[in-house]
Image (cartoon, rainbow, N blue to C red; front, side, top):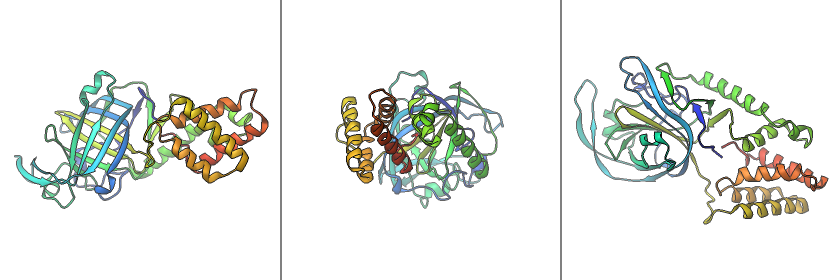
Length: 347
């Protein structure tokens, strides 16, 4: 579950500069995304920055880099749109009509946060195929980005699918600066992720291992659910990274994660989650059915925040004086099974 009002540094990852024109942006597949990315996503991170100094080689001013809880919807779309472009060897722009293949609607939370004025309540973009004239003529993208255009002001941007895990380090300040530098290479990024995973894995409540006998990896994962300030968040393979200019010279970035396909018609209440978790424990103690346990977790996790509450309930009950040894062993088994089957994640 993504926490709000936490600030993370994404370095130069996914940060487009003119030096990346017609090159492959590291951390993403070699080919641009298409209609296969259509679906519902939760926005888990957003950033806004002023990149007006790219041409002069100066620093980029960062206004915002924080976790969020917005929403991204991507649909197939075949609108024909007039778009302004600048072709190779030309300093002037001209308009052409191009047919889109997707439209994406970005909705940000209405927190009243002053820096959300970079996003407004949200915006809409259109994406174009790699073989369109618009994409072939545009200078402003790496070869593995899908070209997008904002509906509001006809600005060009880029959309990627994440292929390699990326660690975002926790920082204290929302604003800052970014020196234009080469994009992180793949080997360096992988080592950063390994170091971040080790840091997160070692950071856990000791009683989870000493008293409950959980593996340290599971203890670290549970701690990340309970504690509100994880030292790192991660961009995961399959996530969407959108980079677009909304107003000169402000560029915005969003990282979005696909939602579960098993969406409930009505979210579960806290009391329903508590009863559901109790029934999961009781059924597992009686039958030991791992497959049903995993299906039950899938159903519950479609409610926002349910996974966090479930882990908190397990820890609270298992450490209470009313918990019997058999129940405690069942809870440990449940958490271990869910972790092994990747039903407990930090996202």
